[in-house]
Image (cartoon, rainbow, N blue to C red; front, side, top):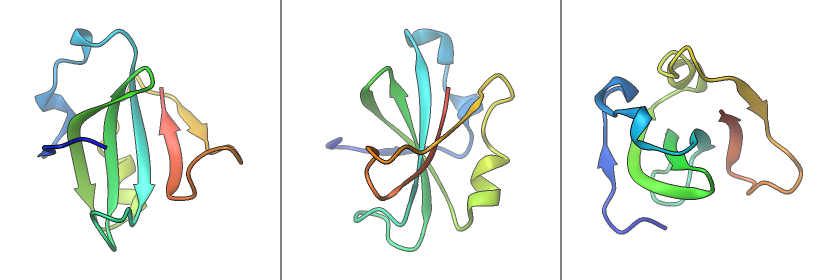
Length: 86
């Protein structure tokens, strides 16, 4: 995983054009942030150190930028993954 996470308040803080293909992966209660929902920015399949935390899935979804599209989780995904946004 990432050595030093940077917790952001909004994805507007990040210049998404700096990434080849930005993805946002949403996790429910990951080991390092129990009882929280975490949205981590990825560049293709590589996690970045940027993440956003909220107490509910609905509050995470409100933070996803409009240009992203929802992708439901697949059986191959980590069990903590709720959904991905592309």
